[in-house]
Image 1 (spheres, one colour):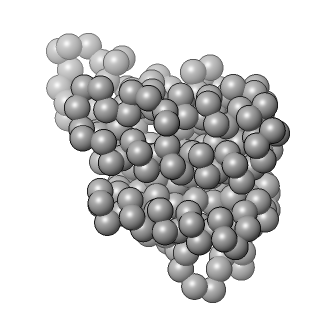
Image 2 (tube, helix red, strand yellow):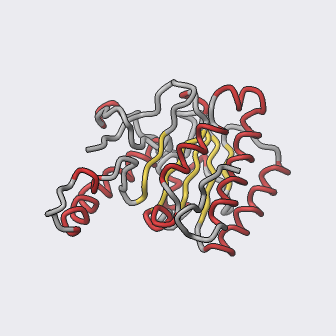
Length: 222
């Protein structure tokens, strides 16, 4: 069974979680062949509320780990709606990583993604604990067709993702770890800047989501 944990400081680390709760190490891999799918469905429902609130309250994607650290070590939750913009935007940069022009370009690309695929990408740039935290859940109407991309260099790897369950059906889970490994590692964003890492990740996500769904879609991080 996979557990919730805060991101670690390794340069190649990343956190990825599912909205609703669908772990990187999927629970189905731990069920025997005789157990029915409804058991997994019940398990998902049981953890959905808790995991979503943990993830968004810190806006750190306190996601899923290969190491099995328990939720007791999760960062203290944050809920600061005063840090939200007055008007809706798919990009919230409370850390000041992006220029106005970059924000506009990213917002346009995100709008194109939603028109072309029906999936919603939302970007939050932050330095924990300076984050709107849980407030983004209602502000963005986060659902199972939403990717919440949190750019936060606090723990080394700057790329963190919360992936909705519907997207999880179309995008291989390995894509998110490969994306974080390529553009989120500390060497990359130290050289290219936080803004460079964010822009590269958004374009890679856009390219992936627009690929036809198949056995080899999103096999490359572009």
